[in-house]
Length: 259
Image (spheres, rainbow, N blue to C red):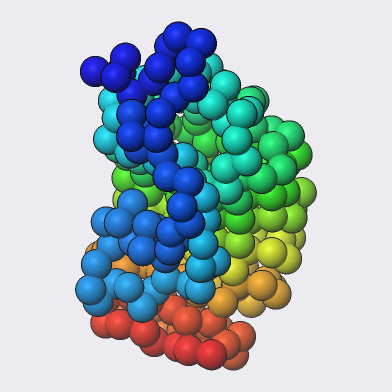
């Protein structure tokens, strides 16, 4: 029950109640666990900080009404990572969370895998990221973010100076969503990794991505696996640019280009 996770009295929340940990742990290991990536997919992970101090609330049944308490907990400790995967925080919860951490200067990793998020949540996050330049890992896989959400993320990228790794796998970007995201990529100089696995992307979307990659300066890793509507000629075109730019391109045949 949620009451067992949050101590709603004035007493401090005990680590064992909320899954908190004061000890530093390997973020690489935690990230792999949070995103449920295994074995052959591990090579797609960029290098991450060795240690983080995180607030671990995965699989805790959190809903939007619990965000106020979450924000109160964040205000009391200098967390560098929020592990909030596999809950039911939803759009309104993320809107409240985004507003609450807009000026936070310690959180570097925001993990919201599988939280019933749609374009409305992404719009709220994008507004926050226009102000907050401290979050480097944005993990939003296994949600329902579509065209409008990806467009909103694309709009914020020219203003954001912090995001280095965007995990958007298993959403609903589609070709038009990728088009909006790609437009923002051309004006961003900090994003290094873009995970777009299983996003209903076809050859048209890859054309937009290829054009954007030719203009970007920071991207060095792209994952487009599990998008079966992409033609081989479209992949070959993207691969040519990737090789020219020294970008690691992951698709269903493996790594096509490498720095």
